[in-house]
Amino acid sequence: MKENFDFLMPSVNFFGKGVIKKIGDRAKMLNMSKPLIVTDKFLRGMDNGPVAQTLASLDEAGVSYAIYDGVEPNPKIRNIKEAKQVYLDNGCDSIITIGGGSSHDAGKGTGILLTNGDDITALAGIETLENPLPPLMAVNTTAGTASELTRHCVITNEETKLKFVVVSWRNVPLVSFNDPMLELDVPKGLTAATGMDTFVQAIEPYVSTNRNELTDGQCIQAIRLVEDSLREVVANGHNVEARTKMVEAEMLGGMAFNNADLGYVHAMAHQLGGQYDAPHGVCCAMLLPIVEKYNIQACPERFAELAEIMGENTDGLSTRDAADLAIKAMRQMCDDVNIPRSIKSIGAKPEDFELMAENALKDGNAFSNPRKGTKEEIVALFQEAYDAE
Image: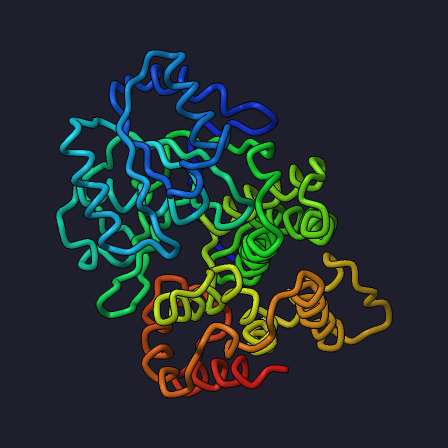
């Protein structure tokens, strides 16, 4: 556990029903004269959806804008290059992202290209950015990645199929908006995938080598909220109370990992996402019980605590036996929200595992994992996830 640490989050976070209406006034307060809206075609096409409500607020405030709606899942370098061109062609001076992690990452990536050079791959790593991004606000529409809060920008190189991370305090949006009413119509599958990402992002910081007392408290509350609400919100997406709890969990988990970092689950999931263009939350969920079982020997007492946090009865059990119950609870959550067990379901191929293992160990999330693995051990974890039934 770190004794000396910094703590990063956006300076302003709007949370609750209807906060989307505040975005126009906040844009004016930040002197945004013409922001670039970064989003995807699905959200832009929704009647009275998140994009429409954002634009209505900007119109009411008299703020003009341009729109880039070409964001893809696992946003690619081509997406941020296209968005940069729209920004320049329209004389924009700021960025507003609308969506889940893909839109937020694409907006951050666009900002990086605008102020830190055209080769974003050369900036992969931690605190590589020398210049500030254009003013950035983030409107969130899923309880998942927490990219609206964090310093992480995750981009896929479509040529090499490598998913890489640019981690910098300069990536943290100035303002975030989390309005649970924007999430009521998110489909079951996406709700489950993003919700599992929230779950993982609360668990990994709890066992991270960079954890601290503040992040521990955030992780504990986030895990409890997910346990209390994810199954319900997958079953009934219009349960506003459950949606609200998941947004709270997402924000808490995001604050935690923004400061305590993650681990091998995310480092390996990035390889699956880059190689097979697979949904990030699903990748994380399939790896979670396997990677954390591997991690137990590094800090069994932390996993015993996780078991209790997740509602398991550990009375009379040894620390190791209690720790094993945490893995059981993780697997049960995955099964309950219909996450596939095997990475075969996303097209994974064993012949790719060696290269993916090499890249996972270079991923920015790998360095805070509680157990330090070899390439051969990471290959074995991918294989175990492939053979899972």
